[in-house]
Image (cartoon, rainbow, N blue to C red):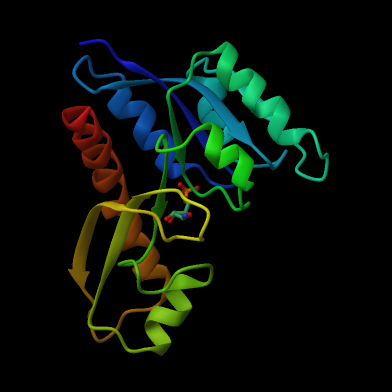
Length: 187
Ligand code: GRF
């Protein structure tokens, strides 16, 4: 299998990054993670890049050349898939265009429901009976690109933000890997 070179963008804990790194160590998972990009110096997920000797790049999104610097590095490393895993910044239209159809994102709800942030709070407030996660292509509109995979579970009566996050993220790890496998099958 010829694996794709992938880059994972993070801003925080990086548990999805950790999971993707673990999957990618298997010979039949179709990507190798060659680069991690963070817009936060203190993103604790950067520790996984370090631990597994994956180069990382810190970008300052206040710098107008930050995306240009990222693109440069992505090209140098011959990256052909970008996985947004808790990356809390919106990418510019021109950046998305340069990697059109090659950027995917994981979102902690059943899209098109609950786009944007504070997802768990809104799910609980809305008294949803079922929730889950979605992996989708990234386009110009927030959380609106073509859906690759969704996974769901039933909420319990006693659900709170903590339990919801735990259950959703557990499902996210599988959803992300299945979505990447699916993309490979489609290519
Ligand atoms: C995930 O729940 C993902 O759905 C959302 O941000 C969270 C990132 O978590 N976009 P982690 O950094 O992967 O632990």
